[in-house]
Amino acid sequence: MIEEYRLAVLRMYREKKEAGVLSINMTHPTCANLRNECLARYRQGCKRSDLRMLQDFLERPDDEELYDTAIKRCDPEKFKPLNNFLKNGIKSHERNIELLAWLVDFQLRPSTTYYT
Image (cartoon, rainbow, N blue to C red; front, side):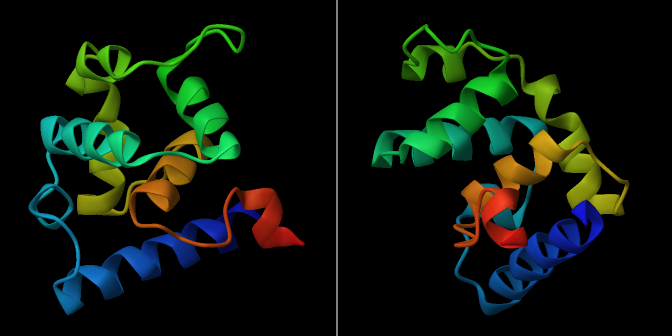
């Protein structure tokens, strides 16, 4: 099941990239650019489920409030698996796919919503 979701999110990323509607951070992904895009999206506001996903990705305690400094201080290397997924199609952990779904505004997120 996760493979189907992974492919759907990646398909949306590629379609948006080809259409030229993604930010420069997403059009030319690097570890630092992905972190910067994450920060920019966070500052635009998040749904509760997106905040949980972000806390999971950043490995922050659920009971701790998330601030933009947590994203700013995050080591860009944390985004390397997602960057490898985007550039080389290397399989990646589900939390990376959830982050990508949020970054490209994939509407059927999280994956549990997609499955239902």
